[in-house]
Image (cartoon, rainbow, N blue to C red; front, side, top):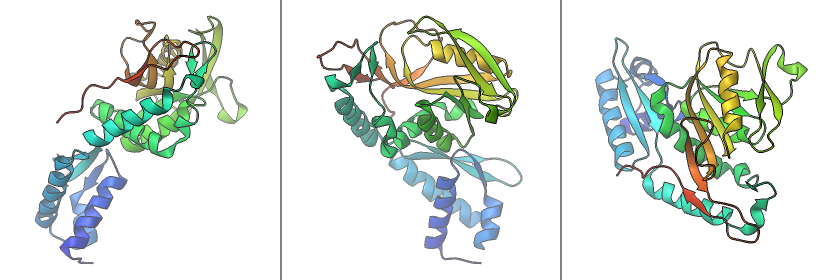
Length: 272
């Protein structure tokens, strides 16, 4: 099937957007679209320049006999700034403060638009780290992990608080809760995590980092390598967390009942 260039550009772009962070073979596209690889290379160059110009993605060339390209998502600076301003405004309401120094975010983390942009931002931060799986703890972190995995094009593994018979054989560990200072249990199915995989830990909230530390210890039982830790909101206190390195979208100041929530964007400034 031979198609016009305008249609070919649309189809190539669609293939890249539908398979983020995955190689797309130019040979396969050439056969499917009835076009020469040289013509497709010109198409890819044009698509690459458009993505680069509006900062919405990076198209990388893949060397090899078959040849190919890979699309990695980016968030344009203006869209990122609008997202950060919107979230700061939504989450600054004093009525969101919960007992124990927590912030009510369930409605925000149920917003598909919020999840999509958060997933894009996390994928942008960790695309170069060869992530092979995204790991999260039930339940609030699951939508955020799925959104991130969508743009990294990897599976999601869920850590459970309690073992479920439907999970089959599982690995369990004990850890000390950072907020309640008591021993808790977490487990993950042996089938959920490929042995020796590089895993990105994603969660919605971090205070001391005990849960993330527990997940890292659990992943060690699978001989998995931790490619990074990403959280939606991290508290400013304690300043020293139980994880050595993490990325958060927002930092949360001390919560005092009746006072405005102090929330600030935490990612480094976007590149121009």
